[in-house]
Length: 424
Image (cartoon, rainbow, N blue to C red; front, side, top):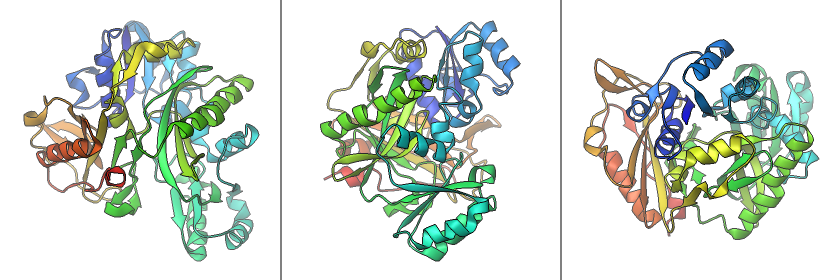
């Protein structure tokens, strides 16, 4: 089948690679793609928010499945537009996408369907004095979240009530535009974080290996929040009991809840959990694959991902399309531009890509790259994802870092402690 992937990052590169390896895939297109993706798929450029252009492309190229990488198109209803025109989409409806695009919607949904999460309260800008009173009466630390989409950077944890008030005020004044005109303040949960992907067809689902990512820019979980500086999978902190709880108390409840609201959830449900006293609590939902967790998780998958996504998209999930590599571990290190997630310089040539492009069980996933004067240069904050698969997490980490050191560009920066928390 012909497949269109939406997106341009490392996540989409990893998705395209697995779809390219699938028996059921034929031509793969990626909009807008990147220089790494174009080695295995055809990059195309048109405005995916323009329904006429999107539908005509899919019909002209006989696209049988659209896989949506980033959250923004899903929040704008791309899956609904495709389905209304008879095109299968692996991704949830605009309504179901509110699990990610509105923190307050997700919290209220979890309340209604008894999904374990932290206690919370929602405020709008007109509620500033009530918000300040709530902060004053809250225990430290305080978690403050922008209600809408903020590129993974709209969450702050404060150990100072005056600072928390200032953060709330900055949010209300438009730090993240419309996304922070409403905020959620929630109880801080002290535990171990993990990410779990559920591939859903609206009623049935399959869980992929649990992973852990590193959001902070600097070693030791210091610095600003980023889109993610590295990941590993599987994580030893998620045992069988926790996975069973995630299945029965979280994912099943989401699918039942969405079905009861006449909006079946089709696509990847990303469950971000905090494990407290060996019990999982939801700290966030995403309605698509996470980045950089995808690069690690998909590297552990064997089989026909195209068939898995297609059968999910038509509401008839075939779980045996894929299998998990036995006794294997994956580690992903993000090579970023120095200064990310704030100000950084672009346009520096990336050297060492050709020498390292065909190593077994090692992958270079492009993210913020582009071609300029026949050279691949950095064009974003997160530039490359370096992933290695091995028989132990320690070996996977060593192989990923060895590969990372062989690739160079001016102002290259990366964390040195990815996976350390899980290596004994």
